[in-house]
Every structure is written in structure tokens, then in C-alpha cells.
Image 1: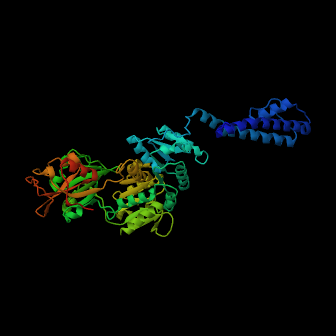
Image 2 (image 1 turned 30 degrees about the horizontal axis):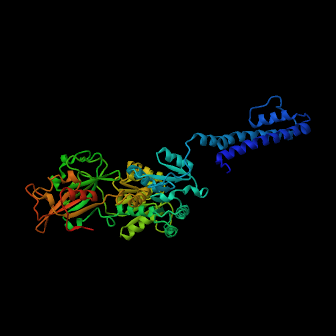
Length: 552
């Protein structure tokens, strides 16, 4: 069996074989030139010495002057060739060889795959999911063809196999026992991977992340179990955050007949609420306003009793009578939902966002650098003059759907400086850049990897393993263990994170709950919170949804 050499070794051996031949050729040419052009004959060993000194640029001894123009031009040419070789040999031939000898060797065969998940190629689409798998201790392997990417992943503690399927189909040996396969390669490479896996007898699920939605059917045809286009799901999530018509701020509030509303407020550092605990400001007791939670860094944190502190820069979500919500505006800046939605960037994601918003009946203004159908304002979103023409300060929300993460981070800072109060939603490619967007001033940021991770985690880790958005829901519930207690003094917030916002008694809805009030068995409570906090409420207080309790 012939020994298979890697590329750097082959190139170095070829160099070592070529150099002596080049030296001999130059030595003979020099000898002939000195014999016939200069008339000053040289021996073979003297000519070889000259060739070696010239190629290595070490300088000359006795031979340092020539009279014939042809000989001079020949020497000059060889000198430049020697200088070129010095700069070529080490980075192209020598250094790669020693790097491969001394750097950590990446395995080129799959480990035992029983119960493991195999990722074909690493990229933004699987970044969040891989981190989640490591967090929960689910075993996985990444098959990567780029050595630099592979070594970077090994440095981060991932198990990596290096190789190209087109060069070594045997890489997939043992794949049949894997738990599941995920490919995030280019669509044509992903299709090849799916076909090769099925040819090897893999019968488990194969999930593919496709760049082009038109490739979904072909990928399914060659054997994929599920095919997803994360960019379109990302657009849907951005549109849902931008429009209350697509995703209400709190589902189920309509059952209160307008007696209770929901509002969002930005807490500036100079706000009287900034850094203070709920027990110090008494919003519920003084105004009948329930602070449900606060958005900070893209995460919704439910309130947990009087000790909950309001984070500077956070967005508060409050529920209460409309007239009381107006009074809160004196304490924090309200976030306006009315007005047009401005979408900056009309690429693949931006187009889908605009399409969904227009289908929902929203007024949309589109900014893009290139004039094309559908673009309302042509210009660079980083230019305040463009923002002025798009009337961003009067907009309800701005969605940054730029393709480049660096532009997205800087664009966020520019927009936040120009329009401090506009609601700002941004997309990003890599999940690692999400914190930078929040630092620059985004109210909500979402990456392709997060939406792809949510889609795949439902299949690989179970429903709800990853959450892109914490939606709020108001439900009509039975009183359960709250009978005989005041709804605001029974520790509901502290124990569950949900809040009682109203009480229904004798067909009358009460949003102001005086101190003497006690819950009766026939009462119905309106409780608002996230899905998780509502589930916890049902367990803690032995409650259940009342008839018609879930408002969808």
C-alpha cells in the first residue's frame, strides 16, 4: 500500500528535488557564459559555488565583476530570482510543513458515533445549537474541511474531524450509529452529504439548513428529514417583534375589554426608576400598574417581588388601567408603537420582513443603498441625512436588516444617537456579535444561529429547549390556593414570576384591588406572565385555566 503524503510534505519534497537541478542548471549556464562571453573560464565547482551564493543571496567572493552586457544581465536576473525564492520558500514550503508537524493533529476519522450528533461544516447557522448541546452535555462531532476553522474549534473544546468528502468518502465510516445528522454546508455540498449518508445506510434523521428556499424540495428528495431556511425564520421573528399586529405584546388582554392596557417604557439612567427596587416605588399600590418584567440584553426577566431592581437601559413591560399607564410616563420614557416601521436593508432578510409587515397592514418605509423597486429612501443608513429623509425620529420602530455584522453594530450606534427613543430591532449573522449590538443600543437583536438553533433544538433536545422570544400571555384562571388571600399579597410574583392583574367577580372585572379584598372560590383571576411563569403558577397555587382561559 503506497504511503499517502499530505500536501505540505509533497510540496517540500518537490522543492528539495528541484533545487539541486536548478543549481546545476545555473552553474552550467554561468560556466558557459564565463567561457564564451567573458573569456575568463571557470571550473564546475567554481560555477556551482557562484550559483549557490547567488540563489541564497549570501554574496560573492572573487567573482563580483563582469564586463559583457549579456553576462551582466544574466547575473542580475539570477540575483532577482534568488531574492524571490528566499521570500517564497519559507512561507509556502517550509513553514506549512513544520506547522503540520508541531501543531495539534486533527483526527481524520469519526470516533464511535453511538448516540452522537454529527454536524457537517461549522458556521453561524449551527453556532448557538452547538453551544447549547455542550451546555446540556449532549455528545456531538463536527466534520470540518477547513483546517484553520477546525483548529479553532478544537481550541474551544469541540470534538472535530478534518476532511473533505470529495477526497475521502471513507470519512463517514461508522456514521450509521449516529443519533442524528445536521448539515449547514452550501446547499450542493449539503445534498452530497445527505446522499452519502443514506448510501452508507444511515436511517436516522438528517436536518439541512438551506440558503435558498427553492432547494428545499431537492434536499428532501435526496433524503433529508427536514430542511429549514433560517434567514426566512429570522425575518419572521424580526417582523413579529416589530409589529403588534403579528405578535401582540400580551396575548389575551382583549378579554379585559379595554379596562387594562399594556405599555413599554425605556428606563434612562437619569430616570427616577433607574436602579430602584419595586418595593421602593410602589407602582402597583399607588397607580394599580403591574410591572410584569423587563427586557434587557434581549432577555425578558419577569419581576420577582419587591426586591426586583429596575435595570438602567432596560425596557419595562407594564400592565394596568390606561389612565394609570399615562402617569408612568413621568417616570420613564414611553416606547411609541404608533407610526411607520422603517426597515433598513433590502436584502433577502429585509425583503421578507417588509413582505410580512405589509401583509399585516403596517406602514413600511424601506431604506437601501441601491435604487430598486420597493425602496422608498435611497441612501446609507449610517448617514444621518438618510435617517432624516426616512423620518426615523417619527417612526414607531426601526428594523436594521443589514448583511454585515460590523455595519449592523455601527448602524445601531448611529441610529441610537440620532433617534434615542425609537424602538430599534437588529439582525446579526453571528451570535457572538449579539452582545455588541445591545451595547451599541439595540432593544432587540437576533442572529441566524439563534433561530436555526431553536428550530433544530426542538427535534434534537425536545420542545422549548432554546427560546428566541419570551412571549407574554394573559389568562383567565381559577383561584386555587389563592382563595381567602389578597391576590397581591400571596407571594405570586416571588414564587412564580407571574402577576395577577385583575379579578372577575359577578361578571364585573376589577383592576383596582383594595386591601380588604379577599379571593372567593367563585372568582376568576387574570394572570399575566411568560409561558414558563404561568406553568409555575398553576403548580404552585394548584390552579387551572378557567373556561375560555387561554386567549389565542
